[in-house]
View 1: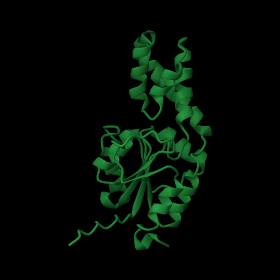
View 2: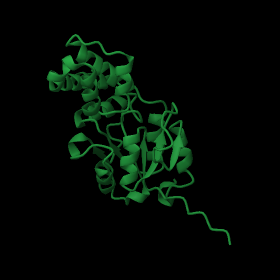
View 3: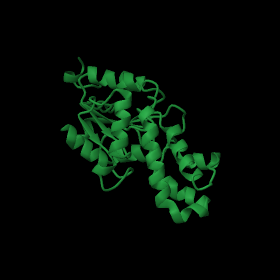
View 4: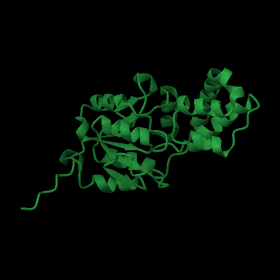
Length: 229
């Protein structure tokens, strides 16, 4: 007898990353780092910029300091300056194409939302305000809410608890390897958003999408009955 395929997961809530999923932050991160280092007379090049994309400042700033030893002694100051610049730039952020439609579509399907971001709370709330999404999320989990950053699963475990939904019924939408691993290790269903085809096959995901609209298409066959209205 042929083995039956497992039923698709029932999704009752969704957790979204911020940078790269809702906010087009790639350029903001690079620009903030460039300005912070420029204050010391250090010009970052394209190889430096490649170290920044998809990573948290605490990780990429250390790598940049190794490439520019003259900055290593004042790395804490650079980090603080970079954060101030990022906070300012984030007030004029642009949404990722399809992000606003994704949030609206999820809410129209009755799915409660959580934000799970490695950004600090002030930057996250400023970005949501700039996008007109300040009231869209049932829970906002930021850097201050966890003791360990992604890829540790802590933030997604907390998001699941905040939503009041078992992890196996929460869909996480992520765009980076650390984020996908964090969500998978927390037991969530993982959608890897990969618009430029940068994620390799080792990144754990239940589905891979090139557009955020594809998340809604996938959900329409898998949303809980109460969320299908």
